[in-house]
Image (cartoon, rainbow over all chains, first blue to last red):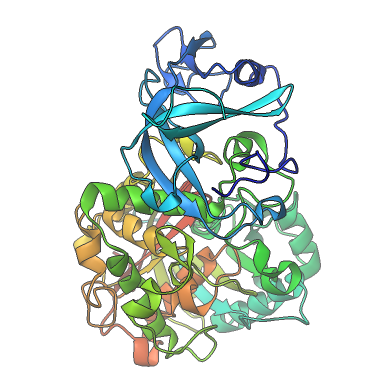
Amino acid sequence: MSAVGDRFFPDAMPSPAANAETAGWWEACAEHRLVVQRCIACGTTRHPPGPVCPSCRSLDWRWQELPGTGTVYTFTVVRQAFLPALADTVPYVVAAVEPDGAGGQRMVSNIVDIDPEDVEVRMAVEVVWEDMSPELALPRFRPRALGNGEGR
Amino acid sequence: MTPGGRQAVIAGVATSDYPSLPNMSEHAVHGQAADRALADAGLTFADVDGFATAGFFPMYAVGVAEYLGLHPTYYDETNAGGASFEVLVEHAKYAVEAGAAEVVLVTYGSVQLSQMGRRLGTGGGGGGGFAPGPAIYDALWGNTLVGNYAMAARRHMHEYGTTPEQLAAIAVSMREYAGHNPQAQYRDPLTVEDVVTSRLVADPLHKLDCCVISDGGGACVVTTAERAADLAKPPVHILGGAHTTTHHMNLSADADLTVTGAVESGRLAFERARLTPADVDVAQIYDSFTITVLLTLEDLGFCKKGEGGDFVADGGLSLGGRLPTNTDGGGLSACHPGMRGMFLIVEAVRQLRGECGPTQVPGASIAVAHGTGGMLSASATLLLGKEAS
């Protein structure tokens, strides 16, 4: 596993500048809850978080809690580090994950706890949380059935 | 075109020196390309009343116009990344046909290789300290620009059985053309085997599935058919153009990674030009990565969705193949200074004028130039013709 210490990514990674529209997503992450934004008017989900429904333009939305399971829609193995902070982390897997219950909306994340060569499209995964700081936790995903959902 | 009215044409084109310009500024590249394109048309700076360019700084067109000594009464700096110049020329067509300008100079210049080095090219979307707006939802998980294209390629392979060897065939065809282009950055022959055994940058894309990183630029001159009639070169007609967007910096927002905005920009451009893909003799398709070309060819309608692999395989894009594409060697082998769209227009015009020597497509009368910007985010299609319709 190409983790740095007990971290998948090192501390030198950038931090999200959360704003009024996005803070709720990061706050849920800090509590290890995976959520997606859902339009109250038409039900369309969206990610990254934003103020307006791209489908019906409604400004009314809510956070919907997700079970934390999902499937890999597509992925890549990043083998050349473009962030200096990740020079010792390559190769690592970046994936577009379709979380269950998110209406087909995808999220970009990592697939961890697996050899990058063994990752497959449509693979069943579940969320694992990495605490970067007291305020910031990042959802990553690992193959389902490898564990009972305990955070790494 | 406006029936019975003013019709926009491209009267002059040029590329600057490329691919390595360590002693030139970005503005000097604009200037060199502008000088040459105006000379190609038989015009001078005194004839120019409209100006368009795109770059990475605010008020970019105003600054480059100042450098060139221009005080245009029409200007445009729409930035759609690699698709910018197809959009700018489409806009210039409308401006000229509406009578808002007589002669629009469109320029591009970049010294990305010399000034910023190789780090930027396939990095982006994850390089620095930087991630504007939604890009943070990629960057925090270490995604990269090439990673987005790689994920599109992976999904296309999953859905349609497309192979790395089929993608490699695109790079092989581009290299064949580059072998005839004395300016091309890489000219040695390439095999499918060379591509698929080159280092993986972001699976399933190899180093040789990725564009080169270069210095360089180009320019073109848009004016009316009437004005062009007594100029230096035969005019090339701008038969139709269209552009669209799908998403910006985060691929989560894209509904289907295997489908690009070329579906919509292509449909509209062909409709406006009253043409179909079967009418096209030669294509200049943005080739940031091999997968960019494959998706674009499918989405423009040159083959069905999912059949791009077969279309490009076995020299499908080579001279004498199903659709000769990127006849200057493309961004994969010849030159990619960051926003390559201008090179597509220049090469399309040269093909329609019959100026391409060993890579000339015999009798080429209709060409398509299609730019792609961002992470498959922005798409722009131009249809150009030797004749007015």
